[in-house]
Image (cartoon, rainbow, N blue to C red; front, side):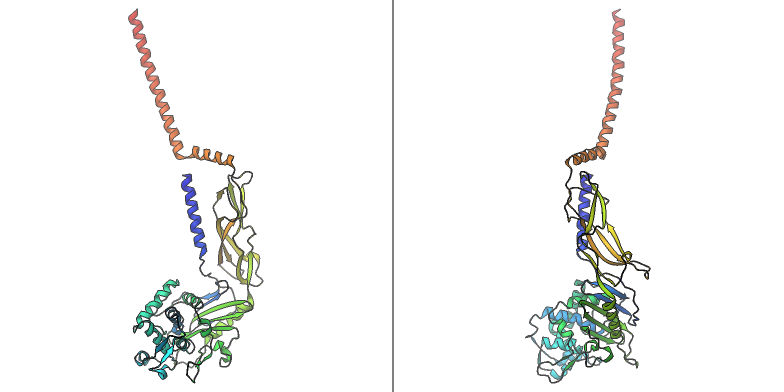
Amino acid sequence: MKKVSKLLFIFILILLVAGISIVPVSAISYTNDVKTLTDSILLVNMDTDQVVFEKDADSIRYPASTTKIMSYIIVIENIPDYENTKIEIKEDVLSILDGTGSSTANLENHIGEKMTVIDLLYCMMVPSGNDAAVVLADYIGNGDINKFVDLMNQKAKELGCENTHFKNPDGLHDKDHYTTARDLYLITKYALTKPMFSEITNTTTYFCEDDDYPLITTNYMIDEYRGGEYYYRYARGIKTGTTDEAGRCLVTTATADGYSYMAVLLHYPYSEDSDDNTYGTMLDAADLFRWALVDLELGELKTSSTPICEIELRLAWNKNNLLLTPQENITAIVPKGYEEPWIIYETEVPESIEAPVKQGDVIGKVSVYYKDDTMTEKQFLSTVNLVASESVERSGFLYILDVIKNIVMSIWFIIAVIIIVILFIIYLILTSIYKKKHGKKKKVKRYRNL
């Protein structure tokens, strides 16, 4: 039994360490005064992968042209030589978009010509050209755009997207073409690791080879000369999107004072027939960036040498408890001027552990939460391993005593003792019966001798 318990404890620790190695995006919304009108929002600190604000981030939404972030991923992963590979612009491929009212990069001017993949990527991401998206998808799908879409859905699953499904490479409305703010964050975070993505999506004006007219960005947040009230000096990229069903959509980032944030905003109400052409997603994003960059900071909540808790230590001479410390410094994005009582630590550790123990051995974990006076519920920040603060040797004498104790207290030992006692009682009974019978025989013999 003792051996089984030890193996079970080791197995739990292995699962614990494996579970901590990949920590999902934190879910937290700090209190703020920003009045947002976009229906789904996710604001994430990119340095720590920590969510600092969310609003219906898991609601199903139509992504419109933010779809092209995934299209970019599929293109760049399937055409490594994107600078030199050229694709013919075919009229029958462009005709797919006839009557859709699509935003384009005027590729009809290049029918019969060949364009480099890099130019087509600029056409797809800067002016949000649906024509470039279908040309690239047709090329990678060998004439079948559905094969390209299959690759998009496979990649979404690989990235851990739980509520995303694509039906086309451009984002034109389809009831089965949807995502969430949280899934789109995962997609964009991955896209940012791909070649040229940041550069292309942060471009405001671009000339394709041999063209004398520019591609102009649809993202006014990054366009100092055309952005007007929407221009935000710290914004970088990434992609806009608009349809009546999707509303205004936006994925963008901002960097200042050593901090970087990504905002994903889906469905700011919009109708093509309405007189209101406000880019509310851009206004919401800028307001959220200002709040985050001014009011939040990276706080060191606990150092790796600060004890979090202690547990019972067995089989160590003259030492009954062991202090546990974080495996690494506990840091998180928190409001400036936060108070210590607002940080809550919840530990998951065994009731006791046996020596020997080495300093740094993983014993359990601590989950860190934030709850200030304005919150009704604590909100998760992060999870960190707890480790032994020192090395402690095992006492041989105490170990022997423990072995004896375990033997004595084991169920098999108890059963063996019971069996021995029963056998001894049976022996006594049989001996008594035997003696009585033997005594009677002696008496009979005596009487006969008389």
